[in-house]
Every structure is written in C-alpha cells, then in structure tokens.
Image (cartoon, rainbow over all chains, first blue to last red; front, top):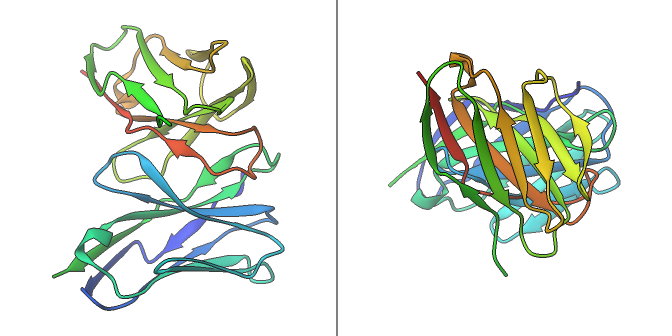
Length: 111
Length: 114
C-alpha cells in the first residue's frame, strides 16, 4: 500500500523560526492531508490538498504539492512553542477509500 | 456541534481477554474509521464503517471486528488480546466515505495488555 514518509523524523527550532516538513509518497494520489498530534492524543486535521492543487494556505500554514515529484511540504511560519507536536501526512490508499499515514515528524519549538 | 468522543480513555486488560472500545461520531458524520497507533509510530488503518456496513479493512486479523449503529456511533472489538495490541486506538468520523473528506479524530483509547 502507498504510504507517505515524512522527513525529517525530528526537527528542533527556536520560537519565531519557520519549520518545514516534507512528505514523499510512492504512487499517484487523489488527496493528501496533513495532521497534527499533541502528546499522543487525537489527531487534528490541518489541511487537505487535492492532486490538481499546487498550494494551500491556512493561517501560518502553507502546504505545497508536487505530483511530478510525489512530494508535499508543510511550512509553519513564525513558529510558537504551542506548535510543538508530531505532524503526519496522509495519502489516500490504493482504493481511494481511506488514508494511510506516515510515521510523522516530531517538531520541537524551543522558547 | 459535538466532536468525536471515545470511551474509555484508558484500559488495562490481560492477555487473552476481550475488549470493546466505543466511539460517538461527530454530528452529521456517517462514516467512522478506526486506527491503531503504536508508540512513536503513525496510525495504522484497521477498518472503516459507512452507513452500518464495513467499507474497507486494513491488514488486521479477524479477531479485530467492529460495528456501526444507526446513529453512526461505532464499536471496535478485539478478541484474544495479545501484548502487541497495546496501543492508542483512534476513531475518526467524516462526512462520507472516500479519501476526499477531512477526518475528525477523537482523543483515543489507550489500551495496555499485560
């Protein structure tokens, strides 16, 4: 089954800096989503981007999608300590019925 | 509008026992998906229910089973518990089946098998 793979596995930055996380996947997709998870709790939906879209914004978040490279990136601008969490990309499975999650990037924003 | 509610929040079971986890979907959502998340890993898809029917299943053995009720709430049942079943179990609801919808996740049930 296709699966997104986030990179890096862990990222540590200072408050105010930008954080960039990448996701690569193996086969063609229809949709890609990014989620955040705080301390092993439930996941929070951030952005859904469709295969015919190249970029989406939501507040301090920017997601890009490059289907030719089978990759996506999540940019968090002007990071805050509250952004400390694990971030996951999820790609639709081979049947387009459900999402397959990658192992995640653990982001630490230091005050 | 209420979100997704899961119960219980924590559970300790003995190997070989059976467990039932419950999920109330967000108002207006007719689809529920269940995920297992081991420590330090991404969520793994168990199965999805759409309008009371199973609508896709991941690579989990038959001792993992589920139900969806007319009000779209759902249960996950695991029989013959094994130590490796220890994980965070996440329920997510969505407006429809298919990967074009964003999921609303509950806070999860932390299952420990001893």
